[in-house]
Length: 274
Image (tube, rainbow, N blue to C red; front, side):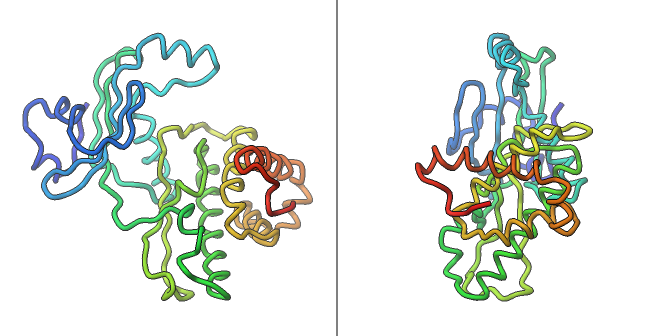
């Protein structure tokens, strides 16, 4: 299977296209075992390719023995992108995808996505909030919090969990933030989707891991308890008092998960109390 968008079809070699992409030269951003991520340019446009070569039966069986689903191809990432788009979550576009082979240990595959130029992660942005301060900073924080909660609600409501649900995997268009005004559009893009799991319904432990990871990554972003309550209300689409009355144990698990991640990572107590 090989699918390419119009631009790639026009500018890539007509023969051995699959092999050309699997071996494309460019800036290597990541190379581990049977996977590599490469930034390259073709026809004046920049792309990222995640190429997967056969993992081998040893790697497959090792993951299975630990109760983990082995990542043997790029297909889970493009399936996740398709499912997230149906759920109304903005993700990177897919410019190309390919898959060949039959046995899980021998599959070769790739996914190609256009480079997301001019973007900044929420992890980087919230270090100084783009120079914003005072009331506009508070208002922007609320806008972003609502957007993140809505993405989490749609993700989990569609039977998906991210497994790396941190602020660093939310991107937005960078700009002169000191000129931001309430009402200016801010759109978040959810990235790094190769480990997304898709089911009919997400088990509670995976909800706790996603939400706990998100909270852990946001604890130093100036969060307040009121911010947490706003998040809960948007995520559950109900008044936070009603949610906590019925789901107090669940949200305590989320908090505990976040604290367990925070303490060893930062070697201190979190700046926020439940």
